[in-house]
Length: 117
Length: 113
Image 1 (cartoon, rainbow over the protein chains, first blue to last red):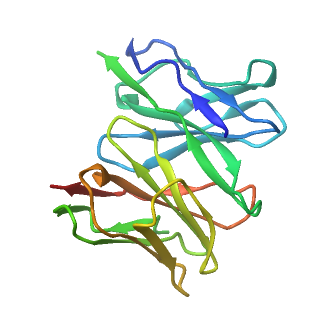
Image 2 (image 1 turned 60 degrees about the horizontal axis):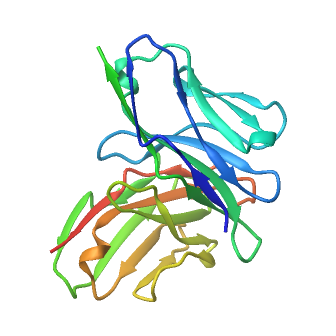
């Protein structure tokens, strides 16, 4: 079974500081990778995705992520964090369903981001 | 354009009862997936439906079932509720292809007492 590991359960940064959230995946083929953000009591909002091509992908809200096949990583970065970025962040890999006709998402356990004023 | 909508927002049930959760996908999307998110964890895949057919099922007991209607909306049913079924149930819609992006609704918070 494929898996996603987010090693940091909780990260605290000061507003204006840079941010990097780690994500490692286990997947045999070229992975389809996603980052989602979840505010308290809310659903998941897509930040960015990687399917193929350029390994540095840009997303919404100033976020970017870099796919590194050699390290099986897809880390999320932001150069300057805003207080409104406080939320939980989930990395996910799109895994083939048993029928092979579609993909399901396998999520990491999430990283909770706290932003200090 | 409206995003994915789910109803109800919150639900409280007692053990042994049955519950039905509803989802309407983004207009033009033909696939709906259901996920369960227990507090403190990432979402877990339950079902995926496309054109009213089940395409995949996660590791959940037969108490969980779902269906998709001709208008592509979907229902998730859970029978004989257990305390452990308390969770946020998320619906995601997509176009239906293999390289799709799934867009999530706000979820239904189910509490089982």
